[in-house]
Length: 105
Length: 118
Image 1 (cartoon, helix red, strand yellow):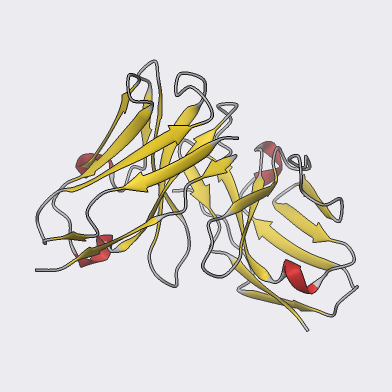
Image 2 (image 1 turned 30 degrees about the horizontal axis):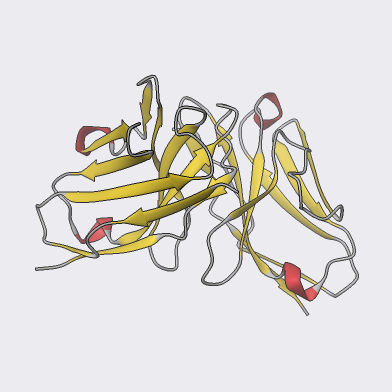
């Protein structure tokens, strides 16, 4: 079965750029979406089709996908961005990455 | 404004069937694709199943033998049944809506915690 691998945790200082990776075999050939889940809340989609932002998502969120790696980039990270982030793709079934805990300190 | 709300028993006995319903408001259920996703406490997301109002379904291979999903267009809601539950099925169950059919999840319910215990 297809697997998506994310780092368990990423730390960033406020105002800096956070990058969260998601790796999978030939992932660049698939569409990737990213979800933000704050503590005790439901996930929210922040990126879809690799690099598109849903309405209402701040411009500091961006995405890319090439080769075997997709990346979620948060520019000018704010304390409110502290959350778990999940990548997701489809390979004969919906697949989620294991999630990355973003700490802003 | 699209809203999804899960409902159903919060406690199910081992070997019995888990049943949840998702009420959809703000959009006709005939417009999108509808999904169930779960998350064991402290763990990651696991997709369970997807269905369109036309009846096309897709299931997580690891759960396929125990899962069924259905849509009730008259009530604008869809449902999940998971049979032969065990403690491993304890999770927050989310219903989610996919606007495009590209398997992205634009809308999420608040989640319903289901515990499996005798």
